[in-house]
Length: 158
Ligand SMILES: [Fe+2]
Image 1 (tube, rainbow, N blue to C red):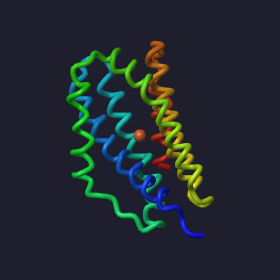
Image 2: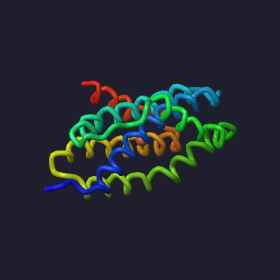
Image 3: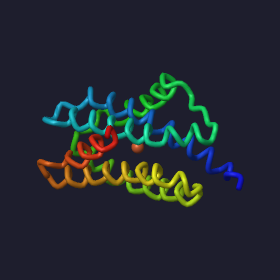
Image 4: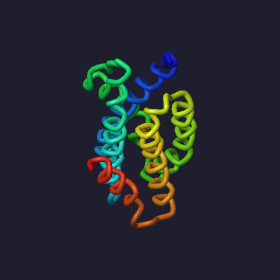
């Protein structure tokens, strides 16, 4: 069965967004002085990289070629200026408001996918759930808020 062309386009876009997101979060880490904020943003960047690497074999399976990492990183960094002046608390609130919608996007990708791609795509969806779990715990002042990210990163590095 031929793979849905929309699936291939969306899969590639998702991969590229994670690579861009990696640079975005690492770049954001330079702008937040609140205790622990930079470390947490770096962890978010690592979660993005893990998610991308989980999906990379699917690109190969479908003959998709992402743009150069430098290009994607530069694209990701364009979103930094818009939020770099926020307080950490405001940024966390902003992420808590925006990120749940991404879960719907990843579920929609799963719904279009061939069966063999689902294990990797579920891990892609999970990375967003992990980021949301972090943000919600951070909002609540949980000192162990970053633990779901550490667990995800450790498992994806196997
Ligand atoms: Fe992501």
